[in-house]
Image (cartoon, rainbow, N blue to C red; front, side, top):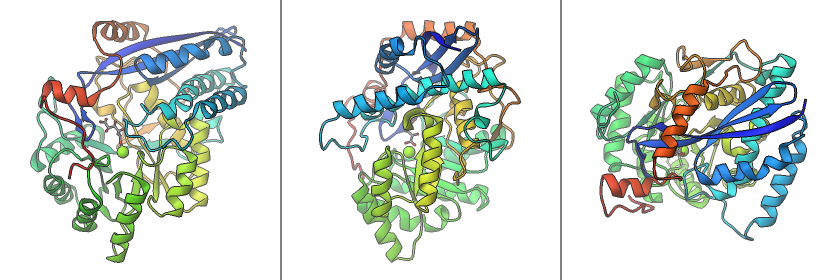
Length: 428
Ligand code: GKR
Ligand code: MG
């Protein structure tokens, strides 16, 4: 089986006005659907970041893919990593100040991941096995995800405005009623920390300790504020919860953790901002800044890299969870297969899936179903999903109509909420 063509479909999908320390989500999120066609008649698919950058990077690897056997991925991975190393700025910082996945330092891993996932889909279809069973075998038939709550403005969506603790509880009840999630994540760094503390406390009161809680302000807090929030939420974040990227830099997070430990507060810290590469994991461990690494096949370099990360974190005695960005069902299935085959997955994975709708789904047969907050590995080869080409075409039409080609939450915030808004770190 050899690859004969790479087809990339840039699409735009509706997105509610969600807030984070990066700013505001635009009305449409950008994604790219990738297809690899082969001389065997099989087609492999994947979904990745959208816009001009990811698209150009995929188009640049096109000549290398033609004639490639999808079983032979190591050479492509080596070459892309080598070229990225040669292009790297010496001493360049690896912490991403950009939205994870948008970091230029992740570009080669992101491009490789999109190809690897489509190749694994092809290999699965060729041998008649689900992807998770190609990469070592599944450890679970279903993968649990968390209720990923956002503060948000009112919009053309069923969630309403969520800018205080009571509406945050309402959003969570709505999401859990629909999906059955058993762990809860709140995207913070948006409102005054006291409002966010009140939101977490209200969630605990409403759902009880059977629902572990995590809060992620994406570095919006200073070390002082992070220590204060960690102290005030000691009880709520214990028992399976965590504090995610409270402040910027591994040094900052190490200080927060040290000061909380001095108070006998063992709340673990997770990161997808300060830790985006294997070298960062080592540093995070040595400094004890981070105890849980957030994986994501889209920018860590695919499903097999996630297994390496799972082994590495296990050896280091660290936990592993999974990060997400706005996505559709093809990505959800890649995340599910990856998670199913990771031995050291210690928390329910993040997913933005509840924020997207059937209208935009490109998977044939419609939205992926959740049972008790979990997605089941389909009894089908490859990723277990196919494309609905009419839906892909609709996504492409939407893409062609919108004026932007890059996610820019800061610009969106200025356009729709506050003309003077800037991303200031720390904000509190
Ligand atoms: O969707 O606004 C968002 C999130 O802030 C996302 O971009 C982050 O990458 O979910 C992410 C996180 O955990 O940091
Ligand atoms: Mg995060």
